[in-house]
Image (cartoon, rainbow, N blue to C red; front, side, top):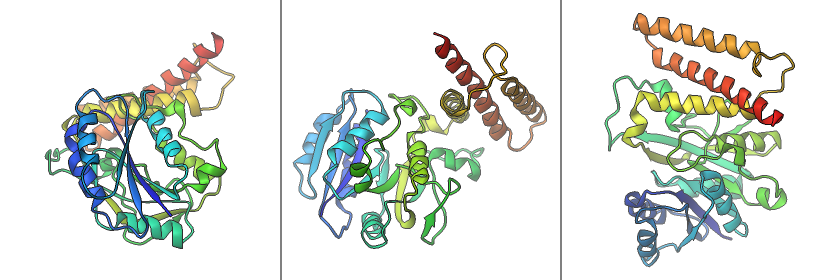
Length: 310
């Protein structure tokens, strides 16, 4: 049996030595390779990976995906690992904690999971946590913590993300249409995307056996630009844009190509945001994120309406 431990990377050469070392330090009950999918990095990523590939430990295999974006990179990882038994994803700004691969293998090989994921802990050791960053906002920095007990995931209320997720590769071999959705691609330094959320939903809709394993755990190193309020606003605007463009149903009643309820929704959210800002209410940023999502939904739906008429 074989496991592929994969990460997609773009212009993060400085992080790769620690990442690969931590991946190689994992205990695993079956042999594993490390797969690096370089997505047209313009820094020293390729020379650094070449040097790391020469070092002892689990073999490091490097491929370059020339189509830009996280979706082509993740789908390339699936294609490269198609003959493996298990594929485990981690992001290039993270570090796995001990026990992650053991937990992934136990979930898939012994418990019969087709997908398994665990904890993602935001690491503030590089950049201090801003005083305004409340716990409820950490999920938008990919933090996942559903407790210390394993359980079967049945609905979208307890998601797991590709920051720390394992797949039984039979699910991809048997369903060639099950791939990351190109409509939710994220290119370069763009924010958002949502390709992992859509994969999670696709697995749920297919009745896949999805396991939460708290012993699978990674540290997520957050860069300073993500610790700004405008990041959270841009993230929600982009999520709303994709929601309006790809997920909302078609409505027959529209004003300038937009359903009236979306206009009312944005006005209401924007008014509430301004009111809370004026009186310095707690939760103003979270409310502004709702308004940004509403604006994105409106513009995303309008974009779809325009494209359908072209």
